[in-house]
Image (cartoon, helix red, strand yellow):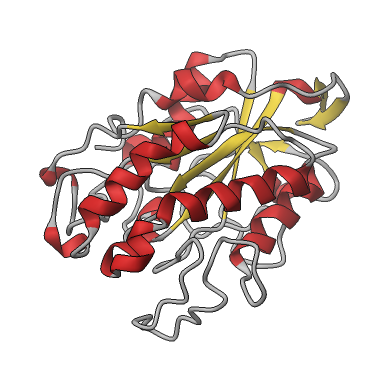
Length: 267
């Protein structure tokens, strides 16, 4: 499945502007900053997936910057991709499954002259702004949000890490999969697009990048277990490009058999 999901994104994501040609040490060589392009991945648990990578995932020769060498310098990624489990690490991640894995593959294949990186901080049950009263498993619903509001930590995590790397890499855009939680509440479902627009507006402002591209998955096969108001959320997602400049909705081309449940990928 992972070679299918979001395959088209490798074309549209390159809309992001590139930075200045500042030299960066990468694997013992100097590489221009505008040749190291990093994307921010945010969302709930299906951005990460929660199953092991397949052998084919470890067979690729990635040219993705690896944060293992920080702060001494970037190193080419090893197979399997480096996973930084320390939340204080600027490149903190949990898994490189989900849509990030095929994204990196497609981008490195499509742009052989570039090094493609990814920063991600998704968490299960994450929302845009909703303080979800049904949060389970010890999740703090106030903290587990991506909007810039008091008590929300997801926003600060991703923005602070991006800010720390801006001098070394070019930020190519934000990739999001959100909305499954909001689909459980009529009010939240109905204002989902407005919340996303405000979230991205704040991100662009804090990063000083008013035209930073934003991409959001439109949601896959219809399933009532995603929430009673999933149809409303999906319609809201499809409206985002008309409300937010430099944004796009991406069809992941997914069918029911691509899942281990109703929204986590089968890898």
